[in-house]
Image (cartoon, rainbow, N blue to C red):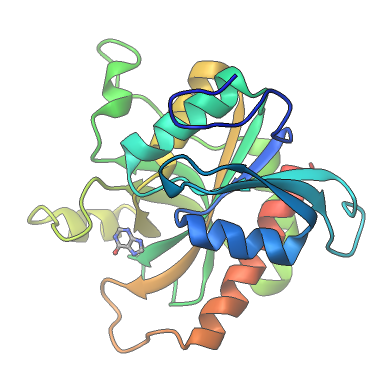
Length: 240
Ligand code: HPA
């Protein structure tokens, strides 16, 4: 039975779903890391695929789905809710990009979003009178961290912003002072939905640009390599 935003049948999704923001990225990832991927969603062009993992190692042959999330907290909350509620999905790993904030990270760094501050009001509504703590699944974060030791993966707090082009005066300095590693637009929302349904979520982020270190843009090749590393870490988390 279809949901408002996913026209798949029950059983069409694997228990684990990797979620890039861009649906075309989902299609490319499915081509590269899935054997015989089947397209399971195309509503609003939000392409989703299911197949078996074809990378080397212990996870070869395991069922895995990949679907785009779109941009921003409301978009990922819609897809995560429908996947958790109606399709038996029990873990979602966002594989996305982020803008670097901390001087410790560079363009090309890979970050595990352990906790996500947010400017979004979506999690404010969850527990009345409470500033919700949006946190990743610890076992999945640990698995991704272990898999990323060889590339010097970062793990820590990020911020999920509702704005791409607007920063509140003083916010960036305060974030640097509080050790925030990077800014993106979906993780806090995803973690909130996972908590609501008792499911597991994680964000593995590639730093695609840096808000305070300028002139370090990634080449197309560097972008692809970093994204492949982030995907490898996400797969380790998906099957932990
Ligand atoms: N802001 C928000 N999201 C992002 C950014 C950014 O600068 N870069 C990549 N994703």
